[in-house]
Image (cartoon, rainbow, N blue to C red; front, top):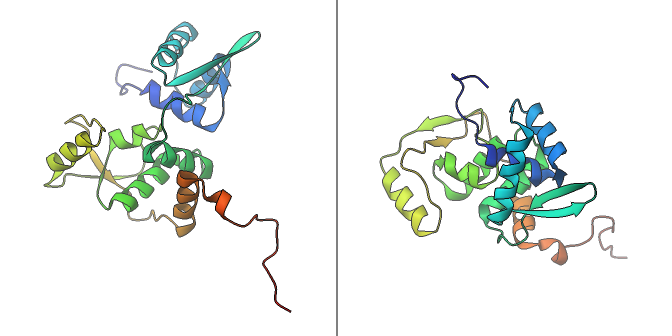
Length: 193
């Protein structure tokens, strides 16, 4: 990473990696390198320990290493659910998918901070917007417990990106654990004679 590159949101990158699967320090380090993020292993170790202390991550001893996972203590909110669903659909396009889902759900432009709350990095494809009621959105989100810095930009999906209905159905299934209410996929539909 050079001086001219913008700083990387290490926390969001780590959360994105761990949203896909639990991993060791070595696994996280390798995944970060694959994303083009160079960070020394000692710094990463300290960062992971701090995230554990803040109860963002859980740590299990699996000799000879430690296995990190997303904390089970954190309550699932719409952002973490959207991040999980978007990552399960396509890891590479997860930020764009999350942006599409959130803008469809909320019917407004989305703050970059909201994408970060999904445990994802900033999307690559988007349209930057400056709505007149931006301050009202910041206040409303603050009242809901979502702190948005005043300098966080607002974005919308580019015109070519549409969220299919089946993605929204997956989101609802994940958010409300609807699998327990639905028919098993391997059973055939009921037939009348």
